[in-house]
Image (cartoon, rainbow, N blue to C red; front, side):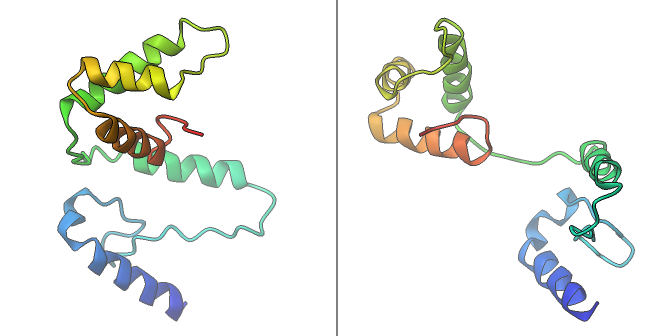
Length: 124
């Protein structure tokens, strides 16, 4: 139990500037980590569902600041992917979309990596 308490303290400390946006397992004790027994085979779906429900229904906005053109880029790339049977868009097409939005190749690459990090965009 002590290592979990220590990890909770470290995590809360590291994320202190975002504290009002955090979803705590136990807010009174500032327990941020949801304890889950990964070895347990039964009830995993129920546990996962409860955690997902707590997080998605927390009504705590997560401030993510990105250029508006990155948001538009994601929309335009998704629109383009719907036009092709396999649903994949080439890097060249992404760069063309980025150029239309006033982005250079380096910014397109950064945007793709950013979107990929949130699984909003799969890049390979």
